[in-house]
Length: 200
Image (cartoon, rainbow, N blue to C red; front, top):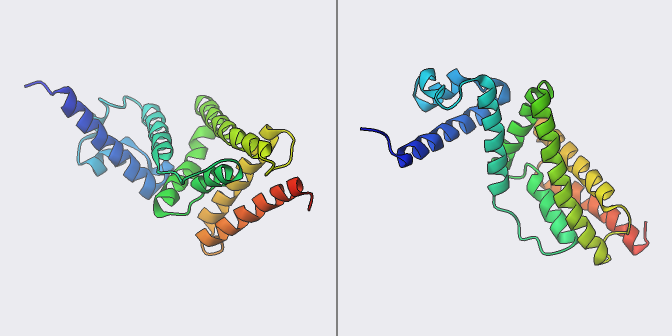
């Protein structure tokens, strides 16, 4: 009896869960067809139906990671500086789920840097992230919460700050526990806002 579309989608969800589990526990370097098949309790032959090549598996894994990242519950943001703060907090590894997501992102950089097509895809993803931050920066400027100036430059600075904090928190969680990450982010934003108040 032929499989229904529902069966196919259910199997695809199972494969997605297995891919995610391998990435979360072994890092991106451990993502292989064999590892995913073992996690799924299936053969590599079955997986080649979904991923004919390792690169197809990697590309799918990156899309899956982005979907999970974007679908994660977000903090109530408000407007202006509060919205910018909320967006930056959502990037930081403050919860077990966010830690897993960030571990996978960071471990995937090596694969992306060695593949021009993936590198271009990553550059595009980070550019989209900067644009989302830019709209929040611009709103905060309109409210007088941030100083006037190039909103895109401020957004790039904020993204760079928070991504650097992500890396430090992943490698040294004792020195950078969640409360310390929040403290550092709030200090960074306070310094930006101080310029708007004329107190810098």
